[in-house]
Length: 454
Ligand code: SAH
Ligand code: SF4
Ligand code: F3S
Image (cartoon, rainbow, N blue to C red; front, side, top):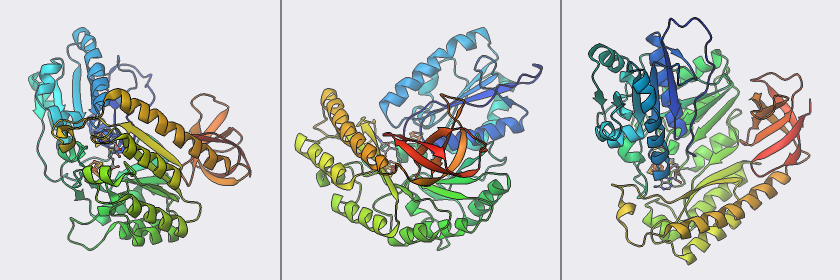
């Protein structure tokens, strides 16, 4: 998952007697989803969304702290808001998400122009906190520890019209030694199956065609609930919902992904043939130090099983380079592993020490220039593989869900195959949200070019 900055939507052009908010979101899909829930709360208070930061009366920065680079970028962005606050003292600046949960009141010290610091466990307290700030003109710190995530009092306001995120669980119990997520998102809490089914059914009725089930480790869904329903049962239940066309899910954990889930993906009519299965490293020594709970060989056999059962499946992964103790030889093991597995795509990251995690304390930290060189090497190997795999799709007709106009060219449309490959083609009569057949005419590393085939 990549760190992104997103601020989208249209700026209303009505008379300016209403108040506006904007959300700027960094980090993963879970954070994107949280921002939609924040937007829902602010709209219920009468605020309207604007994409223009200069028009906004409330600015929410929903933050990520998974790597230091993300944090630096976000602190830079928060710093930029100072002049807006000086020019408009009534402006409310709120910092939410993982960095807020981690840094708490220290954030006020680093950025005195911030009004609200609100943690990941307090996500549904926006209304009361904004009211309090407006009434008292004082800063508010709302960072609780752990606890249930209550059901949202107001529905999320979704950004897209075609695809929707649906969190099925919050938190993570895995404590991979490099990762900050369990510290800032708390322990695993699964949502009741019926609530998820109801939400997806409603989304279908509202016109959404595709839903993505979200969790840090979807394969451990249900372990903390009194019913026996597990992730496979949930997928199966959602596959029965008539009103939606496609089901995606992320992230799968190689230790917990099992045959039952693979069977359900195989048999589910709507469940897409794509598994995002982060391996992190191809070296057993490093995997053990990472506390991932599987070996490279376990992973290889899992992939074999998936490919055997699900024809044309695409498998993507995440890889960290430069984890403490990664020697040149252990890095070579990861390169060899990539060449053996042949992923459709890999998201590659430089290891970033996160204070408070075990790996940050490990000796044998890898120097930055070595990490960077390894990242380049890894990307080069993977890009070649991705391109070769995509080239094999040339001449094939693929089902594509139309997502919208291409960002770079209004005469082109963009969408995704069931295997999650981005396709771009010349616009004809197709409508957003429609399923179309596209003939692949040209392959690149990250996108397919095509033309409408029906
Ligand atoms: N729960 C998901 C997502 C975790 S964060 C999962 O297990 O895959 C997304 C990715 O960020 C991880 O897969 C990992 O590759 C990367 N990541 C996490 N912590 C990191 C760190 N300290 N340095 C570099 N990359 C990291
Ligand atoms: Fe982090 Fe590991 Fe949990 Fe993923 S599974 S969120 S990498 S601790
Ligand atoms: Fe970042 Fe938090 Fe997601 S640290 S990757 S926004 S769970």
